[in-house]
Length: 84
Image (tube, rainbow, N blue to C red; front, side, top):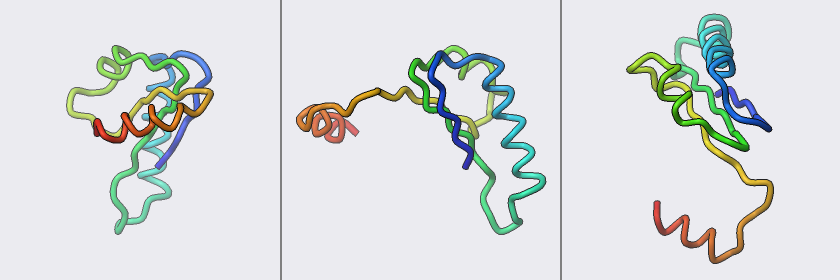
């Protein structure tokens, strides 16, 4: 698993770079007994359009998710967990 922490908005260039890293890792580092690698972006601002249109149609190895600079209140966390 490769993780990139972004402080700004996710761009097409970021996605291309991550895909290159995932491909390299799978070819040069991953062993035959391991599952294919995935790339994860943790972004202050995610851009779902970039994620959806940059990756090939059936590509499921790159994920993007927004992060917050603070922890939510206990009740907010509880609500989020209950909605999973």
